[in-house]
Each structure stands twice: as structure tokens, then as C-alpha cells.
Length: 375
Ligand code: GDP
Ligand code: MG
Image (tube, rainbow, N blue to C red):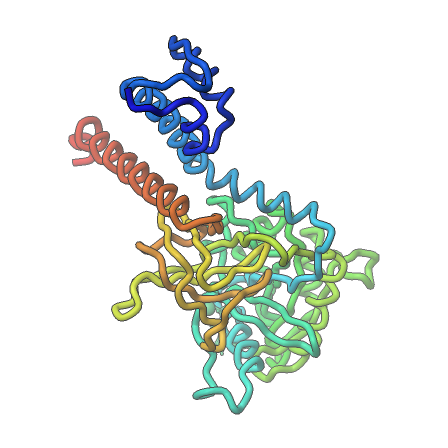
């Protein structure tokens, strides 16, 4: 006899005493709310609730994606949605000027008085146009875009397709169009290298129309801008067109909830430990928030914006760098904020051990079945 009854246990376990009595009945033990229970019975009951608790954590684990979806849905249904900056990926054939354009935009963004005049490299950055912002993902090219998509990360709102005016549509141009179309992401065409003597934007436009990118002049709704990433000609116009396209898309988010986001890049810093570049998608991420990111977990310790400045919070479409994770996550991993650090830890740890288990199985698989084949 321990002198504890269903009522006492109810208080400890945060359950109704009647529920405890019912549970015990199901376990084959008849009692009432006031009857003292022996040690074995209490242990049995504790074990039962423990399993339940663990199953709940387990649910959360296999379903960090579900938690993410739930928060995403909550955001979509929120009353107080606000306009958010568009997230833009630049694509196009090699040497058509993607990197040059990204560099130009990045420097447009840096004001003279900023430290060193160099923007921090954190996988994405924002450009201010009048009183609005545009977020650019800093990895041009298709591999990054399709890797992200393959892993369920659809963070790009608009693709800027760079086509050199002196070279026209090339294989990777077509590939980029295919990627954007299958992701249902609208394309803005930036015909680049307009400063080059042989520039022929009309020819490029005609080529692109075969891929159903019809400019407004021809009755379509694809935005075309002729630019020079090198001289900066019309780059402001391109930014204005991105904002116009964003307005058409009516991009909104709910900053007043727990945050979700996606890892753009991550690495191990010698001094600061695991560092992850995150794009916040919904909600507001705060310093101190308990988080699970892929198979890692922790608390947001230090948050830094794309200007290298420490910030306390990050709102939708904002790229930030965070420290405080126990390990390095992968690109395209999802970030989810949990209520408390304990849950974040147990979910993170369970996910990590699951991943380890899976990796082991794969290794064994290779060793036993495929090793001789591959030799
Ligand atoms: P990416 O492979 O698409 O990233 O292309 P890059 O940005 O590396 O550009 C390839 C080459 O084209 C570089 O030598 C650039 O300096 C040059 N380039 C890019 N944009 C322009 C432009 O608007 N005008 C001219 N004349 N050259 C450009
Ligand atoms: Mg490049």
C-alpha cells in the first residue's frame, strides 16, 4: 500500500480521476477514486501513460512535416495575414549573367555606411526597393532549385530567367523553363547583356514565345525586361517588375504565430558551432525559440540578418543565420518551432536516431547485397 488513490494520481498526471479509474479497469484492475493503490498498480499505470506520452512524441517525429503543414495551414487560415516580400530565384544558361546580376543586386543593397560595405553571405539576401523588400536566393542554377523541390521545399515565388541577348535560348534556358513550369512558379524574363553590340532581344523573345512565354505586347502575361547586369541598365525596372508580379500573386503570411522555415544552407563554424541559414516562411522566429530543424534541435541562440547585424526576431520571407543547434542540418530541411525545449529535444533526438538507424540499414544493405556487385 502506498496510500495513493486515483484522485491523487489524477492530479499528478493531469487527468480526471474517472479517467484513471477507467484506464485501470481496462488494465484489469477494479478500483474506485478513493481506494488506495499498491505500488505495482501505480507502476503499471505510469508505464501505460509513459507509452502514450512516447507515442505522442513519436507521432511528432515521423511528422515534423505534419507539424510544419499544420502551422502552414494555420497561417493560411489566419485572419491577420500581411503582405510578405517575394522570394526570387535567378535561373538561366551558364554564362548568361546570373552571378553578375546577383552581385549587382547585392551591392545595390549595401549602403555606404555599412561595415566594410559588404553584405554578409548567408545564402539569401533582401533588396530594398522604395519601402518594399525582395528576397533573393543566392544560389542560382537549377541543381539548387530542383534539389530543394525534390525535398519538398518550395520556397521560390518567382523565377527570373536570365537569357543573354547575344546568345539566345540554350539548353539550360529550356531546362529552367521546365523546372519553373513544373513547380508552377511564374517566370519573369530578363534579357541580359543589352550592352553587347550583337544584342538581339527581338530574336530572343521570338524564341521564348515557342515555350509559351508570351509578352504582354503579344497578348500574353509574361513580363520581359531588357537589362545589362554589367552596366546596371534597367535593373531597377526589373526590380519593379518583380514587385508587380508579387502583387499579382498576392503573397501573404501570418507573422503572429509560431514560425516555420526552410534551411537554405548550413555549415559548421569553428567558433560558433552549427550555423544554419534559414528562410522564414510563416510566423515570427525569435531568439530563444525551441526549434527542430531536420534531424537537429536546439534553441535560437544568435540570429543575424543579411547585413551581419544581430536581430531578435525574423518575419516571413526574411533570410537569417542562426546558431544554437546541436548539429548541422541539411539544405531544404524544415524548421519548426515547438512550445518547449524538452519536446524539441526529444523530437530532435528521436529523429536523429531514426536517421542514424536508416543510415546503418543502408550501409548493411550495401555490404550484404551490393558490395560484390559494385566491385
Ligand atoms: P552565369 O554563369 O550565368 O553566372 O554568368 P556570369 O554572371 O558568370 O557571367 C558570365 C560572363 O558574362 C562574365 O564574364 C560576365 O562579366 C559577363 N556578363 C554578365 N552580364 C553581362 C552583361 O550584362 N553585359 C556584358 N557585356 N557582359 C556580361
Ligand atoms: Mg554563375
